[in-house]
Length: 302
Ligand SMILES: C[C@](O)(CO)[C@H](O)COP(=O)(O)OP(=O)(O)OC[C@H]1O[C@@H](n2ccc(N)nc2=O)[C@H](O)[C@@H]1O
Ligand SMILES: Nc1ncnc2c1ncn2[C@@H]1O[C@H](COP(=O)(O)OP(=O)(O)OP(=O)(O)O)[C@@H](O)[C@H]1O
Image 1: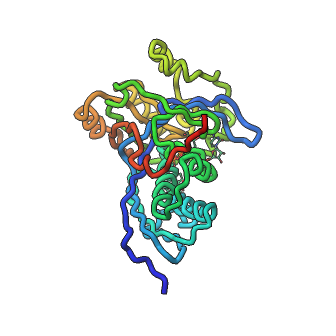
Image 2 (image 1 turned 90 degrees about the horizontal axis):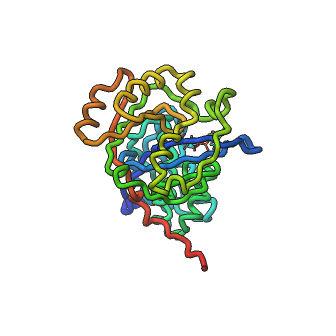
Image 3 (image 1 turned 90 degrees about the vertical axis):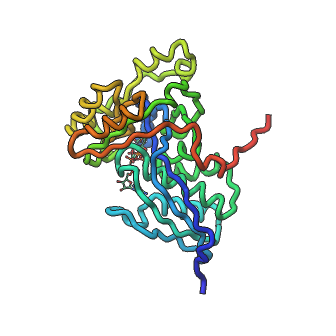
């Protein structure tokens, strides 16, 4: 009989992300939208226990409420890696979910990225970061950035990524994230007729050049915010509340909204005072994904 020896059980972190801004600069022929965004990964997220099986099966030990195991992005990621590599090994996956689902924080995408990184190690595949990002992109536009693993300037559908060094004060901030209890379907917002799709592209140099960066942030916004706030008053109300405390905005396609504050005390205070029917947490930005080292960077011949 083939069985999981249980000897390789390991704990892997799946951080959530914020879109510090999100501009929609066009629409491609396939219906996907061209974006510009800066992604910041946070030190808040899901815990995945992943252990090796030698029978080739991919098993979800605690299926998420409302998500069929076959649709779970963690399971789909493992299967995609199995079919790309021809690997005969399998895995047991157990997820302790902390990132609100459908919250614009990339929870499912991050679970998928963590599974790819972890199994790259457990199955000893030695895929490069670029290869894993390619497999990740087939699962969702937000997966590659978690494998990229650093604060990133994103273009394309979110897969053309460049590392950006955020000003130190942005990494020292406390990000207060509040999620109204509504699920905002990403596809519905991208398909909405009233969505702004023609924001003039910015240049990464405008952000990287310190002298211009305050002007940069004055022009930066989330283009999905207006449509989401019109369709979901809960998001509009939570955002209006959070704007009292700073330059609050929505992450991704919502429903989560966030603001950066200067101390843990202030962050605790806002979380305690958050509106009814919301959940919330605060977290700090990550310079690197904790699993960054589980993929190698390809050496490009020069
Ligand atoms: C809004 C963001 O969260 C910003 O980071 C992402 O662009 C969304 O990424 P995601 O949730 O991984 O999205 P996917 O699962 O790939 O796509 C969900 C749906 O959103 C639409 N979609 C997504 C990304 C994109 N650049 N243009 C789109 O039009 C497509 O209709 C797609 O069917
Ligand atoms: N492992 C998973 N975790 C969360 N959701 C998952 C997972 N697998 C599949 N899903 C499905 O994906 C949907 C979107 O979940 P997710 O938490 O990734 O949304 P999101 O944060 O809005 O994503 P994004 O910011 O990438 O648009 C969920 O409503 C759920 O049906």
